[in-house]
Length: 289
Image (cartoon, rainbow, N blue to C red):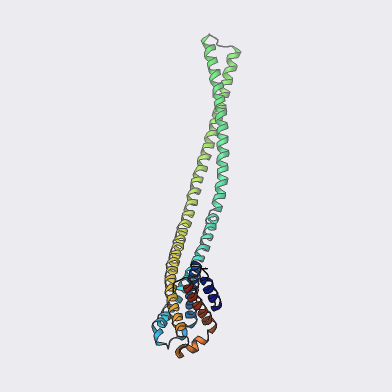
């Protein structure tokens, strides 16, 4: 608020037009801007106040905090680099888990297909054997009936005996084929178990490495979190010290001890003066002064 606008509002107030809350809000907002300007002025000038005795504590505190700030910033940068490397390594590990067992999973797929085919063949043989056994049992029952009826030399009896021998041979052949298939199936199942064991061993090795990687990521994240928290606390301390320096320089801006330093930032100080005046006017209009 300029002096002209202040006079306008004073006249308006004399005629009963009062906007106290509005002026109070403006004063609070401008005071916040003034505090920010004090911090900015302190940031711009702190490195040049070593010879000012009244700011000795703030200057040396900032020198110390600046060194610590740089060290922590370097730690954060290093932790970020390590974190990126760990994430990249994790991505590689995920690909390696697949690649490390690709040959075995391919071999397992072939064996699984063979196992299924052999089992299908065994089921067919077993089914054929049941059919042969059923025929065998039927003819055997027939012979028992014929013999029981006293038939000894009928052509039908002889034919049934021949058929029975033929079925016995057929059943034996089927049984031999089944046993051979069972041997092959057992061999394939043994090979599958061996491959599964080798796959698990390889994946276990990769999981152990992946676990170490995840632990590294966790530690890097924890370090980042702690360092960022420390940095935030440190920056708050530095901001308070900057504000003290800026407030001091502004308060004695015409003093010979800071005149040269203040002249370098005349534009900022002029804005601060305008804000300070506006705050005073708004407080008066709000009835707080």
